Length: 338
Ligand code: PHE
Image 1: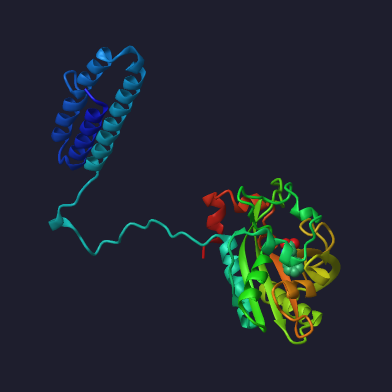
Image 2: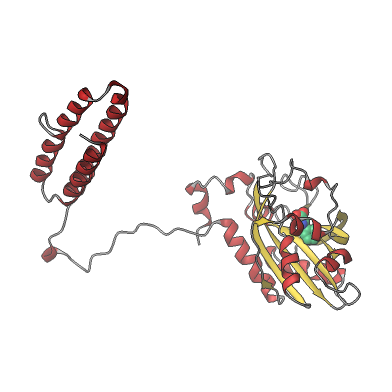
């Protein structure tokens, strides 16, 4: 006997079982396959006559065979046990079975909402790949060789020398290389960092990159647009504040805080008593970035920002631990059903 033979028997049997129309038919098939004189008997016989070195493999094949046939039998049995209305009795006016509606993941919902707000300010959506070149992720963004974010410890490098983007900023580079100014885009997407997971860190997370380049764009435009965004998302009372910071690709650079949505700025656990929550990095596009993409830094200026989506989801919905967003626990996710 060959291995092929038992595979063939298995195919024939499972097809026949799937088509069996009655318990009696099913029982006949069971006896033919697994009964005392059934096919399994022949297979077991083959094990005894197989060369000693092959017996183990035969034994495993026989077990797998038995299991597959039994599984098919059980499944068909369950099928047949289910009540089937005769077509003549079928009442088409009865309500159907309600199997429940799924819902969009809170991260996806928030991306959609945020993008919708920026559309009102004239932004369009751009996208870029999650696997990026070192050039787009770092070099063209004016990030020096020695910058810590380039470290193997912080960024996932691939065997071919590319990397998993650690921010959505490379989409700025791609977009400016392909389009002449003025440009006004948002780019939502997934990012990767070699962070150890805890309540506020995850090795992958989402950002929305924003880029607005034209003649005479200023920091006031940045602040105005982000304040508009904050109010549209969190309500008319939310305040926006810029703090000086450093990013290699913007000059000047800022970190952007929104007043805490949970306590209204009074100070609470979510904002660590400060009344503010850091929501984005931003700044005026560095002239070196313009040069890297072939723009004339004398002719245009621009602002850029990178918003943390999970951050926003956590304050908006009061989610205490970022990992809840990735556990895929339906009890958690169904609370965001719309
Ligand atoms: N890329 C920065 C980060 O991930 C955020 C940022 C985007 C800062 C655009 C300035 C301008 O931290």
